[in-house]
Length: 95
Image: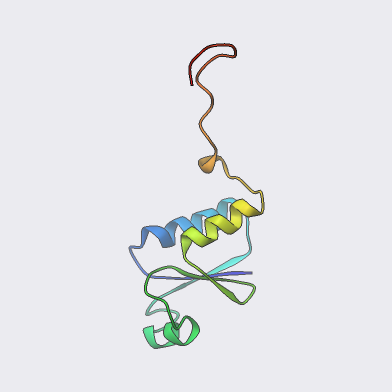
């Protein structure tokens, strides 16, 4: 289970939610000042300095960058993260 602790108007929080939604990961999203306070955040993530803060199966992993790395390690490459197609035909000297 993935837990995302985010805040309003946070692009990386939105990206973390979108990744979980598109991959159909089981996750919960908790928003600052609605679902938790700054004090509660510091109890769960004592070294947190940025948003989002993410836990997977009860383990603090970091933010969106770490979530994306975890996702890629699992081999679940989503289309928005795929490499661009080779634009040079086979046998050409381009690329």
